[in-house]
Image (tube, rainbow, N blue to C red; front, side, top):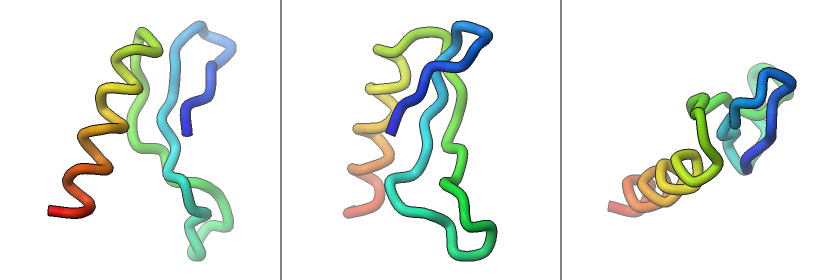
Length: 49
């Protein structure tokens, strides 16, 4: 899940809520939405391999 920050950057959050904190895990901050989407695909790939 990608959200735009007030700084203009994009942050990638985990799809599920982290039971320890009750919030979504921050999986990285990126300058562009395309970079965040690319990393999100990489994360999903590694979760299954």
